[in-house]
Length: 335
Image (cartoon, rainbow, N blue to C red):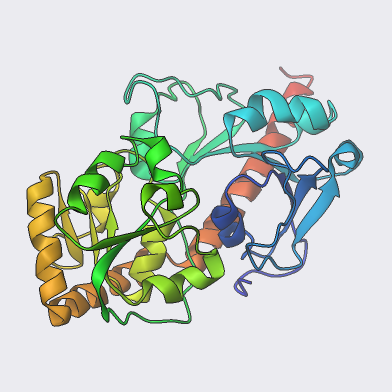
């Protein structure tokens, strides 16, 4: 875990297990994260599971016991957490604790005019990319922040010895145009591509590769292809760049600010141009390696796990102080 922060006065954060990869990287900080678990293992209540090598600071709590525990902060990660889950398992006094809502996604309805579901001005809203913050309508909320992704440096490095591209998206066909199923399906007619992720076997893919094995698996492919039209910047892309892989992606959302066209990979809104450049990488392993080295340098600078966890601790502590200040103001005789 991150050694930059004192282990004294460790924060106690309560959240739900929504995105395993994100929870794993969040857990690299010097704080304790409590997650609810119940026998049904339904959304948010999976517990630690066996997919990610969580450390001892991810602590399971029986859902029925949550209301009896004291936390420093409540972290919402989905609409369901905010609208339903908190009212089912939190005590009334816990709902007045410092609260943060991390928004992982872009607006699914109208791209610019969708009002964010979290409208409570006492809750800090955190977006995972500046693009997401730009697109969501969160006007009137005083505390809207951005914490960009951070990922651990993998123990493997780019090999690129398989002259094919790799795509890593869960349930890509079921999620349709947002994740670029149609783009992937067209591109693979012209470029040798493999697909991995949950629910991909029925889409002609190779199935799921567990997160701990993913960096080694993808590092042998010539390039990483991201056909997604409209979601947040994917953690799988961060991980690929960190291994030293060149990335080919649609020039949409936050990708245009991270991937330098022709320097660390290729981005375009013209699929024909992307196909041409993918085949160029298939034919020239040296070019792919050159681009991948630049991608790794960008990732090391932009997606530092220490910066990520430090940003999170800073915002959590700021939210706690704001909550204390608001309570003092509410109880003041000088209102």
